Image (cartoon, rainbow, N blue to C red; front, side):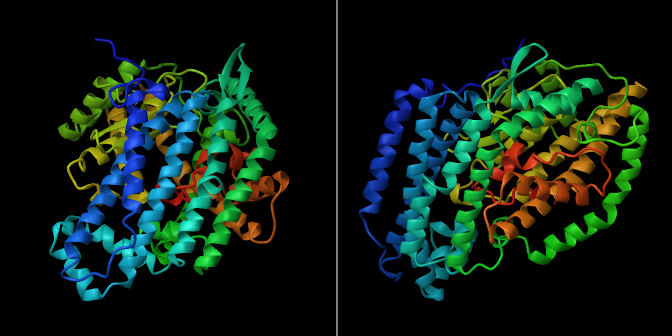
Length: 517
């Protein structure tokens, strides 16, 4: 039985961006948010008001789950077709609803912080809220580090058409750009896969040079977006009296600064060992020194490609050797069409997995190009999906987890498939290729990710003083890459700050170190 490379979104809300079911859902959600907002601030927490507090907090979680469902669906619509204007309008609508829900949470978070410790402990341990006690306690701790609730509400409202809007602008600008390569129009995401995955070095070089040229054309717009996102965050942190731009990402990942510093110290001390691999790979390619477009390039004389069906079958079979439950989930996700994998223009770049809390499902977005790396991306995103699947029966408020844990789950799934493929192969050239991808991943986690972190740190230091130009950003990125890669490359990617969408994801600042962790 052949499998479909396109996901099924109609089972969530039929009709795509014109869905009446979605419109009705959003209309009811808006009404319910307005109704809850009208209830005003909560009364002081006492034995007499405790049940009202329980009801209110459960309502907030219910509203959050419903908004999450709608936002995830709308995000899928916008990803599959960056030219879908209605989907972009719906994204704006869900962002507005998110701001409204955020304001309601801000009201309650401030109230959490004001309550007597004994009354609070009784609320989260001796009521139906005990299953979400950890989340509520963390929320209460965070509330004590923020501004007054009316200022937090204002900042949240302004972020919708300010801070977050710059991220949406980036998605549109990068998604709209098409170039002609090898005689046909392709997206920047498709072009990127050429200089990462193509075994022909001349193809990789041509793709990389066109990629750099294309991002240079978009760089001024990207620089504005990056500068203004950072400016918003710096202003917000100043008013919260947060001294470091790492305060929020460390809180989000439940990291200490000491843990992060220790991790990077070890990486810095040990990553030079990868230079031996770089030298061996350069020798194999017949060049003196690797370039950016050689680091992830395949090694070995492997011309094999995998159809989407072959890749999904291999992922399932490989994971089944480790755990049948994970394999069953992966098979279900493929068969139920939870995955958008088609290689076509008009899609946004990158790959992700998004959860649908009401449906108790997930949707995975990627552009599968037939390569071994594409198969690993599929395994990676299915790892995220299974992580959400095992939590599907938990209360919505207990399902949130840190990015560091999330990326551990997905990377682990990927490694299971990689190891299985190495063990299954009997061809020396193929085994060399698989071993190469393992070492490429080491370079990614220990060098590429570190370069992103170093760049972002330096960028925020400079942004606190001035707005940075394209040349400024290129210089910062070049310096970060040279440091992280131990001066091990002949050519770098100074416009990486523009081409890497992770820098523009406003809901997860410093979206880099969780991968290395």
